[in-house]
Amino acid sequence: MDVSELVDRTVRGDHRAIARAISLVENGAPELRAIMAGLAPHTGRARVVGLTGPPGVGKSTTTAALVAELRARGAGTAVLAVDPSSPFTGGALLGDRVRMQRHAADGGVFIRSMASRGHLGGLSWATPHALRVLDAAGFAVVLVETVGVGQAEVDIARHADTTVVLCAPGMGDGVQAAKAGVLEIADVFAVNKADRDGAHATVRELRQMVGQADRAEGEWRPPIVSTVAADGTGVAELLDRIDAHDAHLRRTGELERRRRARAREEVEAIAVGALRERLADVHGHAALDALADRVAAGGTDPYAAADTLLAAVADAG
Image 1 (cartoon, rainbow, N blue to C red):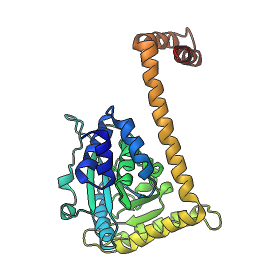
Image 2: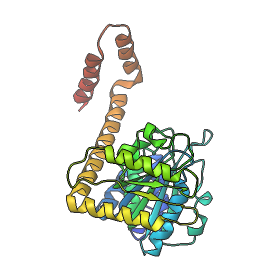
Image 3: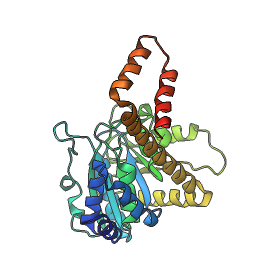
Image 4: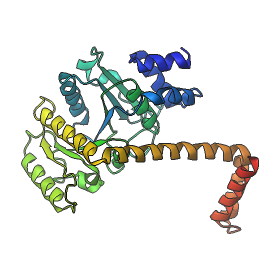
């Protein structure tokens, strides 16, 4: 299908078109600019909820349980699951069919696995574009589940309206995620596998950490929800807390601020990528290597070398 047909069918929620558009996003296809231009007027409505936490905490199970709860409440839902990349194909190691089989026949649910392709932060570089596709497709909520790589997971907070940090008892330290630096980005905490020994201690430690944080009056205080996602226990309450955070964001204007910051980073990333391409076109890799050799040998400093590259781009118009 051509770009106009692809855009039209994506906006109408055609799953095949949505999948095709995301594939073009992942591959950085030449049509990408036209696709984003066509989808832009239809974006800005979906709520983006990120789920992160250390490996083994039950992110996929919790995501599937949230999908079931959202569908029970009538919300069209998309899932973007960012998986580790295959060292052979570069594709996602965990495929769509491995996940959330019970939702496969639901037309109100779209599930897509994306390969991280070595990108730090637990997310694929293509995630922002893929979120725009799903937003334009009319899904009320987009759940983004990250790779689960520990210390690099904080990237999710830059892409989500609400970030849910999952913890679980019996994973070494009482709150292992504290060392990964992800507690600071949490809007909602979920202590999953709460039927295990040590769950109450984990909740208690989280409450102590949340209580020690300095917060201004009226600032959001992350709630802590105990869940057993495998059987659905606590999932309705978890979604209630996510909804409460969304209401807080809208009431305080924080939602607009977060989305503006997200758009700013996306524009900047595209501009920097385009600049790299122009540098390669104008100067070529050989010239850049020559400058690098001069910097390494002490013949010039990196700022002067960078000025040389930028001047070449400016001269090329």
